[in-house]
Every structure is written in structure tokens, then in C-alpha cells.
Length: 232
Image 1 (tube, rainbow, N blue to C red):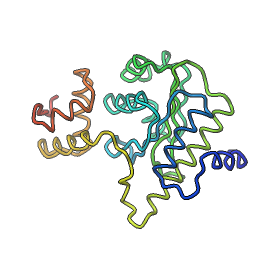
Image 2 (tube, one colour):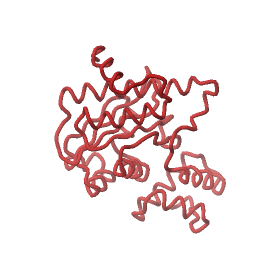
Image 3 (cartoon, rainbow, N blue to C red):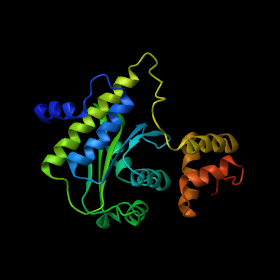
Image 4 (tube, rainbow, N blue to C red):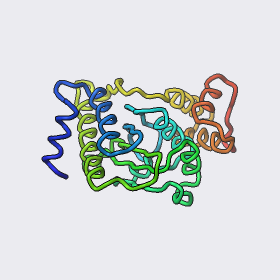
């Protein structure tokens, strides 16, 4: 990783006295510019499952669609990058159908042609991902890949700075656009006496089977319009 380029990008981000939320928004915006992509998002996530996560920032609605789709089907570049701890680079999503049969068709229907996800990690500690997408096929350039890795490193340290605050569990600045999913997961956990992980799997399976957005299924659960069963 180029130290010189790291300094250059920090200068472009204007990081002086910026709170983590502001810095991550700048990281997303700068990623679009220097990596020549259409959109970007940073997701903070804990553990190997999909229960503890939040979208910290996103440049556009399609980035949020990709996040929701991955939550719904339980697969995709962000989840793979977080799980395996390395970049996931897909220059042509049309060729990824076998790898992600649930995610790829939905992403392509949203106009996405290429996806690139970079883990936010320090050693074995995984904190989330920097996720980029493009509406045209093609790999990141060598410079774009370098800059994405640098920006992922900067985002990692922004998250760490927040976790090192006086209250290390206070990550309220995260603009989680899916609180209803967490509420529904808690409700199913209590109703069926299952773990949070299993509750989310049941919600996700129902959403996938009925081709319904995860947020919509979660809202139905919260509004008592839907009650899942362990056989669903």
C-alpha cells in the first residue's frame, strides 16, 4: 500500500477534526471519484453472521438496494469479503450467477454490472466492508484498486476511532437504514425461542421464497401481519 498515496487521499478527504460519520461519507464520495465507479457504501458488521450490521453511509439508492438484497438472500460480495477477509472483485456480474444465484440476478435487475468489496479489518478483527459498484462491466484499474485498498484502510481506522471512544459500544452515529430487520429478528427470537441467528435465517428464507424485500417482511412481522413458523 502506497504511503504517499495514503497521505494524498487523506488530504483530499480533509480529515482534520472530522467525526467518524462525516469521514466515512467522504470516503464513499471519494471512492466514486478516484475508483471510477458508480456508487459506494460502507457497512459496519460484527461476527460471521448477518445479525449485527449497519450501513454507515451510501452514495445512492442502488447501494442500499444491494445491501438489502444481500441481507435478503444471504449471499453476495459484501458478505464474502467480510467472511473471508479479502477483496472480492467481480468485473462482470453476469458471470457470477453460479456463485451467487440469489444475489446476481437481483443486482443485475437493479442495473449493476460489476461489484467490488473490500473488508475493513485489522489482523483477525473484521469490522465491515467498503462496497463499490459500477453500471458497466470492467475491472478496477490498477490505480483504482490501489485507492480502494487505501480508502478501506482509512475507513477501518475511522470505525476503530469510534469504538475507542469513552463508550466503546456507542456506535449511534451509524445511519442504519434497516432497524426494522433487527426489531423483527428480536420478535421472532422471542416467539419461536430460537437464536438471533436462526431468527434472521427464517426471516431471510421467507423473504427469498416469496420474492419480497427483507424490510417488507420484517415490517409485516412487527405489525403482526405475519408470524413465522420453524418450518417456513
